[in-house]
Image (cartoon, rainbow, N blue to C red; front, side):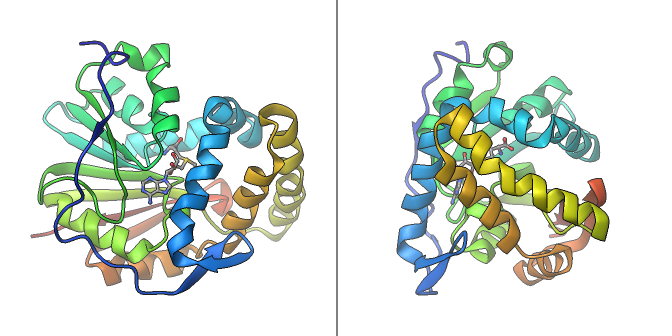
Length: 264
Ligand SMILES: C[S@@+](CC[C@H](N)C(=O)[O-])C[C@H]1O[C@@H](n2cnc3c(N)ncnc32)[C@H](O)[C@@H]1O
């Protein structure tokens, strides 16, 4: 079966689905009811799905490709590895993992439009052992101890209860497995931070021209600014139960890769 013809599956959430306990939460600079965030995030990605890959190249001047390659180098995929890529969207990470020799991959995302856009990609249609599943990173629809490696790239920022997502990733990893989070972070150099800030302010304008949607890119910019810094996210990894937590800055902290291990 080719990737294009393979259906997107839906599965019931795991029985131990964690519950939301905070009443309100950030949606960019807005404070909204926590129960509304998933729907608002889904609307953002419904709107940008068809232009998502092009916009990524425009907004990052192609640099997101280097960051994703760095992530795959750190993972060092093996033929007997199964990857679960949370918030996998149009399949950039899972695709790279398989092209670099990984055994099999499952993409899990709340947004079917993003996955449908990914299934149209000619480079992904050639890949076998790639599965697309509709589901939420906070209660991953997968059995305990079923993944060798897990990733979430530019996804954690959008998740309502991030600690729940990290804890559930730990549940799904096999002992000895690793979890990687690639996400925008906090710039370490003051001159670069000023340039980056100016560039970020222009992004909603690019979004309007290319995707006919400035609001979604305004959310993107605001959600990046509100996201925890490197140290806070490392502490959150440790709180979730990950061991050997490490963080690697990319482009002086514009983005960062956090990694944690499940030891037993
Ligand atoms: C910025 S895109 C990243 C896509 C891909 N990982 C990449 O690096 O290109 C964020 C993705 O996260 C998904 N997402 C947001 N919240 C989610 C959640 N709670 N569970 C699963 N996916 C989620 C969105 O639908 C969207 O596809």
